[in-house]
Length: 71
Image (cartoon, rainbow, N blue to C red):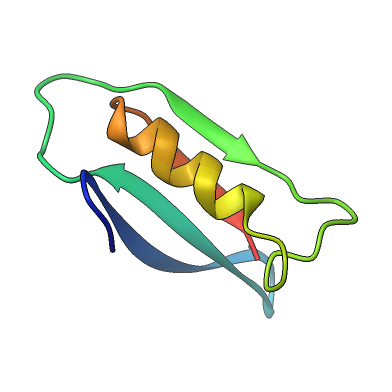
């Protein structure tokens, strides 16, 4: 992924037979105890051409947060 963070790809079912993909940004090194969680919702954003959400996920993960954003 990157310097100071890692990305896990998620697939989860929100309703029967309705699957959603997401990226989960985590700190590179495991933390002891809990960590804050942030959910990014892109609304009318184009994540494949605009990198702001990836930048936010990486930045927050580097400082110890779990960040999930739906693609």
